[in-house]
Length: 196
Image (tube, rainbow, N blue to C red; front, top):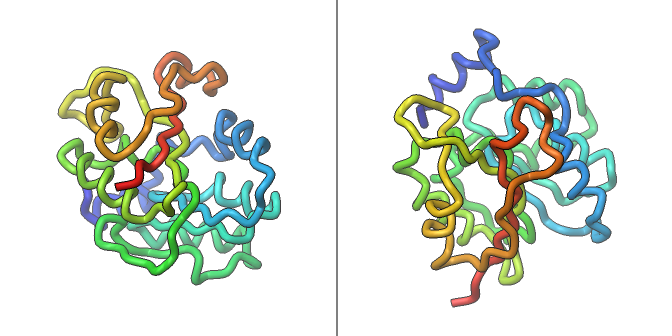
């Protein structure tokens, strides 16, 4: 599941059920409240990049993204030829390193797509990539965690236990404005990096 070929095949065979074709409503509402357009923002597992496109067109110029698969990156760049190619990276998020520290990491269908065994590594990598006042904001699924996936679910209790050591949990509650197919199955989270 964390293999590049797995995700390449999903895009090549059009098996992208998670892709709603536009920026997710809860994230758009969140983005619209951000006044500082100079923030450094990262979207891991960006896919076709609808949230990235929304941010870019809203004037956020320091927005970066990373994905395992070249196909969705190409799809994004075809739609947004003015986007700086150096700010959208084809690489493994867990092996990626950059000198920039991000103010905000947007979570949208990436955490639920990685094998649950990598969740602790996700916490470490996001913590490493964030600036001192940095935070993770976005959506996480809350349906029972099973071996069948992606997507993989989880619970508030699991997520609190996972993030508590490295992050202050500012918000972790049922998302009130999910799109209809995800209603009742999403949490909106805001997790602030703790300073060592």
